[in-house]
Image 1 (cartoon, helix red, strand yellow):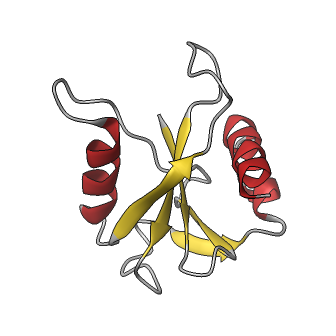
Image 2 (tube, rainbow, N blue to C red):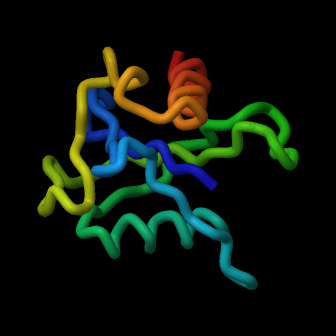
Length: 109
């Protein structure tokens, strides 16, 4: 599942060094939101769940994503990624991730 991690002001999004959004694999017997928060914390970013960023139904093949809001101002290491301005971020992402980001932005509206 993809994660759309926004900064405190929702002006920037976290993009990995490979041009992708962070992803997680669900863990048995653990809520998906906890897996997401723990995975981002393991990257040195404190964040909380902000909402669902996917399509209305979480079907196989759908744009399934959680939106998190970072409590951290910056990323501690460029190996984790970097926060980039939302405007134009889609052009820096892989196609599927760009589609996920676009869906997330519709949720924000």
